[in-house]
Length: 231
Figure (cartoon, rainbow, N blue to C red):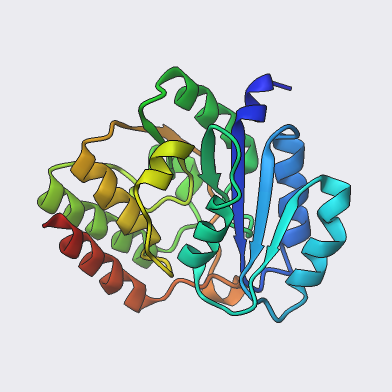
């Protein structure tokens, strides 16, 4: 395994992911055994908290149990406060994203230390065969909206896999509580003209019936956050 992993913090926000959580955490630890892994449970009620606590010592992970459900953005910020490594990445607690892609993202981040590295679902056509057309369309519309506002074009600005230098993500002074976190990060990076490198990743989309939590109104919230941050 690469010693580079010792330079990475993986933040895993969790809310009611008991069906996939144990498998996901084992995959993260298998793919990146030397990384710092911080799991933040956002007041789950389905047994996720118990799963995380039972695996804490076995996998060598750090656990934060939020007393109230505050949203993904809040969970990420709680994890960020404990991050000790040079680079930080967010890992959703479902199985849509493959942790084995993190090694390639980290190699690219180390090669370009002043950049952010994004894992793009849309640079790998095979990765999107199961993605719902509505979700794909929403991401593309948000990408176009961001391009109109900031003059920056990305294939997948709302990917979960955003790997940033720890000093940079802290300096962004993130305020988001929910899924608008992606739009806030993107807008602040765009305004600072931070280089963003996109690499293709694996992706296995899930549906609302499978536990996907993002909703139609999150699209409009993200669009507003892009607009609000532009000036």
